[in-house]
Length: 247
Ligand SMILES: Nc1nc2c(ncn2[C@@H]2O[C@H](COP(=O)(O)OP(=O)(O)OP(=O)(O)O)[C@@H](O)[C@H]2O)c(=O)[nH]1
Ligand SMILES: [Mg+2]
Image (tube, rainbow, N blue to C red; front, side, top):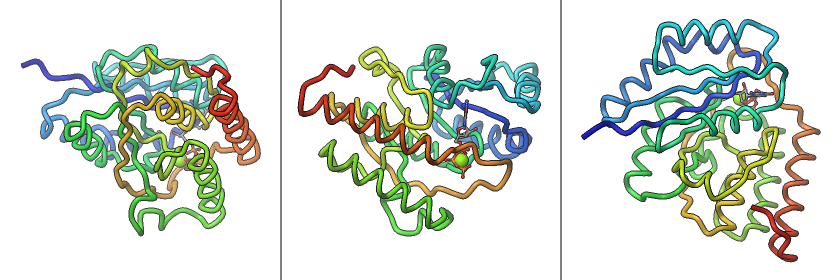
């Protein structure tokens, strides 16, 4: 039987310090999982108008590794836009989205695949909220913001989802034929999961740790992201209670 292909989407914006770790911390880990699980992987690396040498570094990978495909935005357009670029280009029947600073551990891809095989769900979402100790490296301020946002979404969505924001997920590719995603920034992950839950799709969470960033600088702009998350919440509210279309 031919191996199934899983497409790994990695949005990148000025991440040279982390990209330099891929030959030791990403490629061999994914390769091992591929052998163990009998899956093949392609990487879709999207450079989002970086001003450092991100594009050059990932292009060098692509020159030596046929499984690496590189995309480039001429100007910085946001993490959501980069993920959408990736989704349009995938060849696999499953998609995994991964952060480029590897704060979700590549070895936990194994857990996403195992949960998918066990459940056949439309989406397997990594959550550091499901067990104690998985958020130990996250700062108290970030934790407070994250807990508040998640609580609001949980109240509105009515499901028992513990965390709407993680990028670390596996999706069946077909679900993107049924929903339209428009987020440009970090809130894309919340948009996708909200739309899946509103459509009563099967979403399963698995516990995974979230590490702190060890290399490079953070790209998140807290005020802007909070505004985006709240604006998304108001869309969900209107959809749920006033039946405003939101596909
Ligand atoms: N394509 C693209 N990717 C981005 C952009 N901003 C952030 N990212 C990527 O999105 C992921 C998350 O961004 P981070 O800066 O790590 O944000 P965070 O994980 O909330 O915070 P820290 O890990 O503490 O920095 C990383 O893979 C980034 O490279 C952007 O404007 N465009
Ligand atoms: Mg990060």
